[in-house]
Image 1 (cartoon, rainbow, N blue to C red):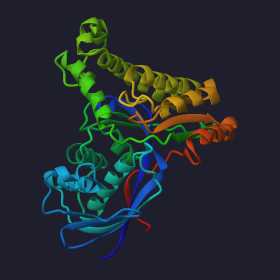
Image 2 (cartoon, one colour):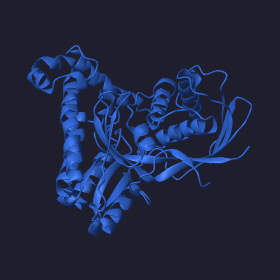
Image 3 (cartoon, one colour):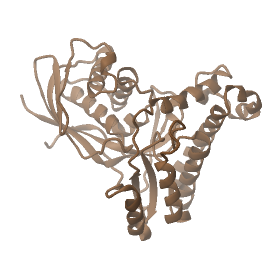
Amino acid sequence: MQERMFYAPGRVEIGGNHTDHQRGRVIAAAINMETKCVAVVNKTGVVYIKSDGFDETVVDLTDLTPRESEKGTTAALVRGIAAWFSLNGHPIGGFDGRVTSDLPAGIGLSSSAAFEVLVGNVFKGLYNADVSTLDIALAGQFAENVYFGKPCGLMDQAASSFGGLTMFDFNDPQKPIVTPININKKMDGYALCVVATGDSHADMTDDYAAIPAEMKAVANCFGKEDLRAVDANEFFKSIGKLRSVGDRAVLRAMHFFEENERVLRQAEALQRGDIPVFLRLVYESGFSSHNYLQNIFSPTNPKEQGLSLALALCEQLIRSEGAYRVHGGGFAGTVLAFVPVAVKEDFTNNMCNVFGENCCHFLKFSQKGGREMQNY
C-alpha cells in the first residue's frame, strides 16, 4: 500500500468570542502552523496513530460506542470521527498513521480541532468517502462533544477545515454561511501574535461549560433554545426580570448580542480596508469578554490571573496603536494581539520577561484548509 500525506492547520479566533455555541457569528483564520499525517491503509479494522512524543493511539473500529474511560483522550476523537462517518453512511477502515505537528498544544491554537480535521481527511482520502469540507468539521465537533466530552461549537473545526480568513454565521449550525475575507496586504504594519501565559487549562471544564449553560438559561426564559433565537430588543427590555437567572448569566447574554453584531462590523471594516476601525472593534471585543463574558480567570482560582496580567501589559505596551483581547475559550491560556511592527521587539522582550522565553508566537494567516497533500 502506498503512503499518503494529509494536512490540517491550526486557527486563531479574530472575532466572536463564545458566540458559536449560541448559533452566532465568528471570524477565524487558519494559520501557518499545522498538523500532518502520513497514513497507509491496513486491513485490520484498527486505527494505529503514533504522534511524536506520545504513546501510540489504538482504536478498534468494530466498536464505535462512546467510552467513559476514553473521555478527554485522542482515542475518543478518533472513535468519534469514525462513528460520525459510519452513522452518516460513509466508509471507514483501519490505517497506520504517523503524525507530526508544529502546533503547540494547550495555547489556544486549536491543535485538537486540527487533529480532528486531519483524521477526517485521512478517512476521506484512504476510503474514498464522499464528504465535504463542512462534513469533516461537523465530524470533528461531534467527536469532541459526544466522545471527548467538551461542549464546543463548530468554529475551531470549521476554521481548520475551510482555511483562509473567514466569517462563519452559525445560525444554521448544520449549514453555516461561509464568507471568505480578503485583506491582501492591508495589515502589513502589524504583527499577529498569540502570547501564551503558561497558565493551565486543567480542571476548567466546568468554567467553560458554564458559559453556554448560562446563555441557554437566559434563552430559555424566552422559550428559546439559544440566544440567536431571542430578539435582542426584547432581551434588553427584560433585563430586570432576567436577574432571577443570575446577574452573570445576564451579562454573558449581553456580551453575546453585542459581540454577534460586532463581528459583522469587523468583517465590513476588513473588506473595505479600514484597519483602524477593525482594530478598535477587536479591542471592544476584548473589553466585552473581560467585563461581560468574564472568561479571563477562573473564579475558583482568583490568585492565578495570567490573562489579566497579559492584557494589562498589552495596554501598557501597545496602547491604542494596535489591539488585543482574550483568545479563544479563556480562563487561562493566551492573548491575541495585533502588535505594531515598530514596537514588536519591545513588546516581545517585555512579555518574555514576564511569561518566559518563547511565550510570543508570531503567526501568519494561511489560505490552506484541511486536505490531502497531492505532492507528497
